[in-house]
Length: 129
View 1 (cartoon, rainbow, N blue to C red):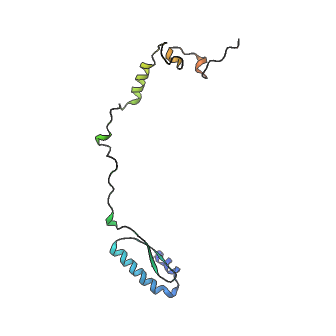
View 2 (view 1 turned 45 degrees about the vertical axis):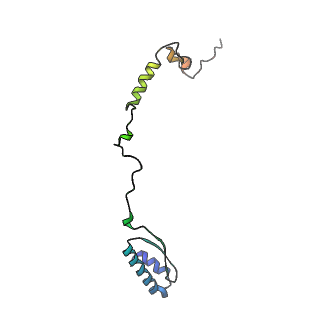
View 3 (view 1 turned 90 degrees about the vertical axis):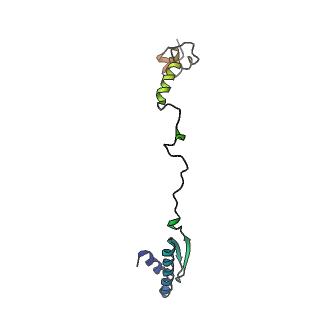
């Protein structure tokens, strides 16, 4: 007797064990014939109720792919694989030392001037002299 069945017999009154044995025999034969798992409940009087019948293992189908596989041309892109290098090249050409650049006030390095007072803390300190 397996531990799972032992728990069922412990739940049922001993007078109704023969009836439980017949019920379990019928349940196990049904499981073997249908190749399904059954979730059962047992009353104290040995009556077995099938709570849930699982799917047959033959019913399993591999799910269809939702996305295309990674080697599919759908995933190809025209973006350069070295995106950091492209960005660095463009930023060097845009931020060339040009005092008339539109970002000269925001980025002092774009105007060609780098002042220690302006780079450490944002705005230049007020002159109190």
